[in-house]
Length: 256
Image 1 (cartoon, helix red, strand yellow):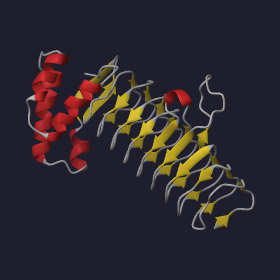
Image 2 (cartoon, helix red, strand yellow):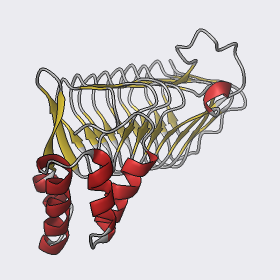
Image 3 (spheres, rainbow, N blue to C red):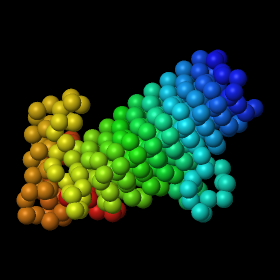
Image 4 (tube, helix red, strand yellow):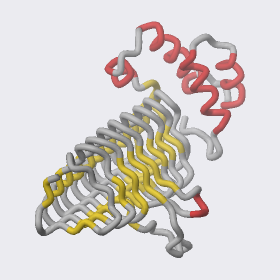
């Protein structure tokens, strides 16, 4: 194990020999690191934090720190991070709270760019991308392959659906439809399907065509959401079923 002499690893921390710990890092006693992780410098890993393999942490990250919640009284809660994530400079990830389930979770193969904040009890899926200074309030869910761009913020208890693309500077105050492309003008608006992003992820023309028809029903027709949902239930395609199910589960309403 390569550990710079200026770094501090508390007794009890589990750090495999394959990890690299750069200058001025601090690893708390309840931290468990996976194989081949790299802490470049000035990284803080705190609390009960379990981290998978091959994650890279850039300078001044603070991971597993106490939540920014006035109700938190130092209860035992967790942060769980998967494999192969890139976590850039000054990212903060708060551990969970008892009231929110006790766990903040990040999946695998995610990119968190500079100054991203992941609030307590948030759950981020796999292959997600966060632009610079993107912010999740507490209790947010980000599904697989979603992108939240720079300077965007997601309100508490909102969900961003799978493969969705949130444009820069958007204030997300309702749930974001799976596969959708949204951005902020005077108010948040869905601009249709995230066609380019889905094609890059290997969606076939047939899948894209079915989704395009579904988005026309949701966004272009004069049907209200309840009427559009009923029509979606009768349409073909697994992705359309995912879209309909997301709307049915939404607690805050969806951005149309």
